[in-house]
Image: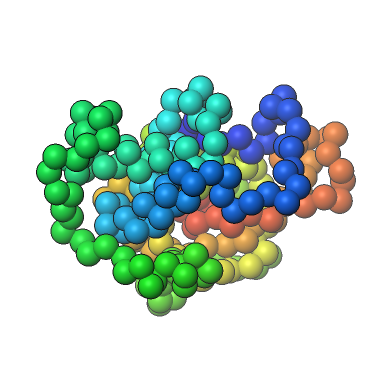
Length: 219
């Protein structure tokens, strides 16, 4: 979906201020939100659904809140949508009925491995033969889906070249909405900076971005 979360290529938001010696968590509540989210990931819904819940935040709330506030907002949204808590329970901080789910929660001992390496989204390569090869010229489709997508607005309609075939991975556009994983090839696509940003960009600069096959068409 098009929303305030997709800020790539946009200007006039001011500089990104880097915090020296930034701690992992700025406050105890951030640590708690991290733990709650990690323990419920895959139980409440998929990672792609979680990302889409963040994307649906009110734009003002999104821009004026912190990273872990985004996580908390997404977790609350998914818990409400799946009927695991009520709006009254969230408002009062009191859950009157036990939270149950058909899926088993992740064991605490799995957290260290997940934090360090993530959860693999690659799937057997024989599920779908790659349509493109390195060197092929492609155009990122000019799509504007109402749901979740990992196709940034600033590359839509732009011409690039396949640099690498990464393999077959879960397709986020379906996995976020109960449509299943539907794995497909993912490519590293090289775009010239001037193709994306116009003649004021440096002539030799390039951007490599990973894109799913359904995001691409032959140039």
